[in-house]
Image (tube, rainbow, N blue to C red; front, side, top):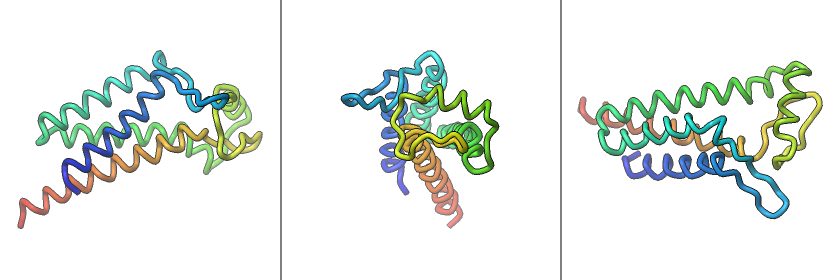
Length: 146
């Protein structure tokens, strides 16, 4: 894994996450609602971490890895934890109402929490960015020791 690959993967994640700031509707399908008010600060933090990585790689790589780890943890606890381990009826109802109009590749359920397509892809991109930066860091550490 090289820096260019990490930048490409993180740039793709940045663009995808930016859709959350603007919202995106394709025809009658709502992919993601505008969540600038809710997620704007997270977008700015990620953007800052990414820019620091590009400009000041030596410590920026660790800042980016830490932010991506925290972001992954937050997304896991907000979505996949409840999909895997179950969810209370109240939380499920709030979740399904909030994401009622967004596109689901797996239909919303009244028994398990199922993230919409936008969030499934967002989580995949977060994991890809996190894995790429971790591989990059480990590779640099191993190369220095040899």
